[in-house]
Image (tube, rainbow, N blue to C red; front, side):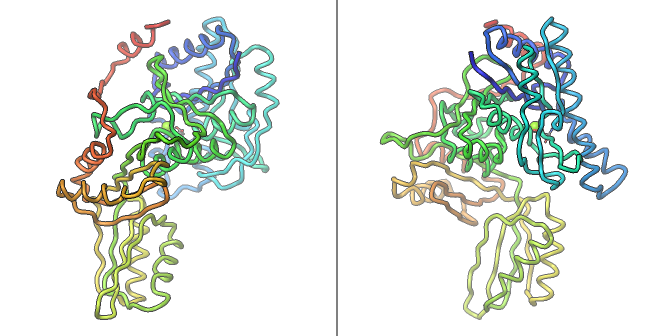
Length: 426
Ligand code: ASP
Ligand code: MG
């Protein structure tokens, strides 16, 4: 008998039918003798809809009120799931973030969990109930509701798994595990059986959307084993856990890509101490999170600086850069909205020289121009033109021997097909 935390994302609880399927699935676990704590996201696109709703009454709503609003999405799905379980004759109890004892700081919209008082969850489990917890939310010491940042239900699940010392934290979504690349872009991508925390963290940070990076960081810190798997099938997914380095380790575990960033170049800056400091202080004060930076020095004592940042922060970034340009007398500002970052990730890179050379050569052979490069000990990222992202991912995937023999086919399953699939093997 195991203690399992099972998190279901928005797609998995998008409709009453899907909530019923989740209920069935949790009951099946209960019947196998396991203790189960479910964590749910808001149904489908609810959170996005709530964000839009807020914008329709206030263009810059207070973060406290925003969290108040967004936390309601998860409250709907948790109650419905508990009811669906009860309708099948099983015990269930739902808890909001505060009822589940999730205490956070007061950094609204991206609060951090300080501690979890698990006594209520334990009590629920002791009565034999399936405990259902709203993801993505917590409470401050003052008693105000907070949210943990978009995609934060993953973090709730991992934190709870840690708090109650669960055997595994299962994260169910519409994909059946972690792939060596996004299979919609690289159809020869393969599903990985195991990924180390370090590799997963880089993959998540560099654009692999399956798991929230913060959740992986949390899992790594507290050694919580994550099982990323499909809500629509019984197939084994991917385990994210500590992996001992092995001789046969692949050099590259996976390739992530991210098309959400933009690039700004400031030209004709004076090449003297303190200029970069000014530019990036102004950007920081405008809350722009800068990712990659390059500076090149030209011969006439003028330098160019380019950097990338999340496209969603374009307005703040442009405002900051215009201000900086005026102050520092830059000659030109260029923005490139259509770029993509492609990242090769693998702990195996550490012990295998020549990865960068092989990557750059592969891109060159495919006539893909590199706009920027950045590296960490286990990652090489390049920025390329947005129109070449698919080609870049595919050729690198092939060059590093990651291609599988089978071709991934994207299936847009209807609710009935999903139901049929899920009933199989039951
Ligand atoms: N519902 C929240 C979001 O859409 C949290 C989550 O899904 O994990 O970001
Ligand atoms: Mg989500």
